[in-house]
Image (cartoon, rainbow, N blue to C red; front, side):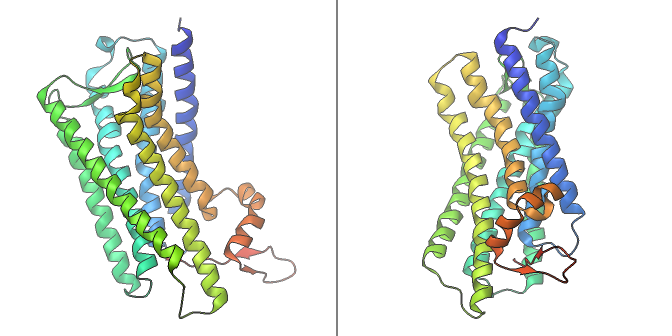
Length: 313
């Protein structure tokens, strides 16, 4: 029989991971089936759903059952625990942070140099960046699969932890500083982009087109900033706030649940800011908001529904 706190922990992880996993799967499926050409930003959004799926899936299909069964750490199957831990806490964590940095860099270059590069060259750079991010994720995952070198889930403390070895300590240090560098880079791009938004004016195109493009780019920039804030929040939680108490429930909230919640919320943010991947009922509810945001509505005939025009890098 589970006590009150273990029961609440299981329920909170189950609900959050279920929502996060299926929202991320849905967004991935909608992006893959999206007609027409992808913008570079949306290519990054597509890849960003992968770490969200892996982390939420690890909780939904591994952490929740292990915790609900009240297993001790010694009774948790070791090899699956190591493999899942490295994918979720190693590879997926690095992939999410590196892709987020690329999204911030994309907004920076689109705002500062909107007409400097041909679209094919920008796409080539995007594919190279995605390849590097995926290679980093695979490398960090494989490094942690060495003996006594991985992140594992410990149901006795309701949290992920590293194994007790010098190798595991080195991996922790490597991941920690990698995340710090990526977070600083990403937020630096965001600050510079925000400065450009505040003082720049769009030239070379009609005023109506300029206003529509500016609103769309600002909308995607806000999405990027919110996603960065999610990762920054988890970083603060896992470095500083969890140290304020050694109570199991407190550390569960600021270590384990924070890690899950930011990846679940990340998918919800992408769903909210990208109406082209939203369900039809959700788009119908938000049609007026989207129309006012883009400033352009096209009606092909009196029998057809209004549809939005959007073509932004």
